[in-house]
Picture 1 (tube, rainbow, N blue to C red):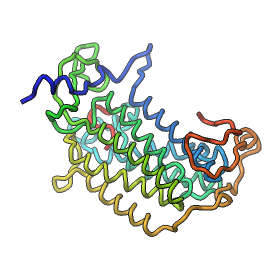
Picture 2 (cartoon, one colour):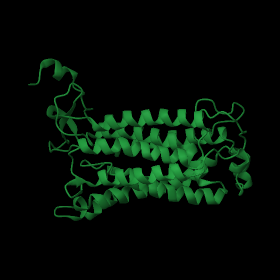
Picture 3 (cartoon, rainbow, N blue to C red):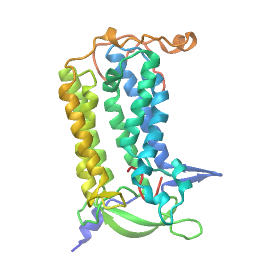
Picture 4 (cartoon, helix red, strand yellow):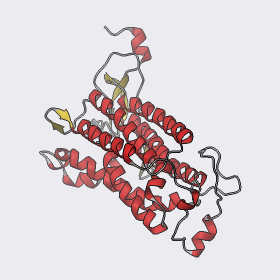
Length: 330
C-alpha cells in the first residue's frame, strides 16, 4: 500500500523537455548531449596534455569522432528498434530525425572509435593512448546525457512503490493531444517507475571516479583504461536493462541490450588482460603529422606534464575548446 510519505518522497519529472523560442524548438536532451560532448573533449584534452601529449590533439580527433559517433548511435538505435520505423504504423522518414532523440551508446562508441582512428591517423598519434585519455570524459558525458532522458520522461523502469520512484506525467501539446516528448505536463501522474536513467547516471559517475583513481595509482596505458571503462559501463548497463520495461527488441525473451552488454563486457575484459602493461612514454604521444601552420600557431602552446589531473591543466597554456518519445538510447 502506498503511503503519504511515499508519495511525498517520489521524484517529480520536469513539466516539459522542449521549449519554443520563436520558430525554434529548444530541446533539453540535445543541450545535455552537446554539454557532454564539450566536457568530454575539454577534459580529455587536458588529460592528454598531462600524459605528455600535444595540447589540442583530442579536439582535432573529436572533429572526426563526434559526427561518426552520432551517426553510429542513430544506426544502432534504428537497427535495434526497427519495427518502430519500418513496421506497421511506422514512418521510415522518422529514422532520419535524429533531433528527436534516439541514440544507442554501443553504435556511438563503435563508430566514434572509427572516427577517432581516422583522426589519430591524420595526426600520427596512437589511438589506444588517446582512448585512455578520453575514457573518463566519455563516461562523464554519458552521465550528463542521462539528464536529458529525465527531461524526456524516457528510459525508465518498471512501476514501483519505492520512495525514490519517478513520477511520469501526462503531457499534451498546444492542441490538447497527448505528446509525451514535446508536450507540457497536465499534472496528472500516469505511473510511478524506477528511475533507471538515474541509476545509470550514478553508476557512471562511480566508474568515472574508479577510472581516475586506477589510472593515477597504476599508470594504465595502451588502451587498457578504455577497456576498463567499457567493462565497467557494461556491468552497470546489464542490471539497468533488467529493470527496464520500455519497448525493445528481444531475443529469446531477453532484451537485446542485455546480450550486447555481456558480449562487449567479455571483449573488454579480454583486451584489458591481454594488452601491454604500463603506460606510453610522453615522446610516443607526440604527433608525427603536425597541424597546418596557422592552426599550429594557435593551439600548439601546451607543455608536457607528469601529473594526470583533469582539474589542473598546464597553467601556462590557454585552454582551447571550451528524442524519440519511446526510447532514446537503445
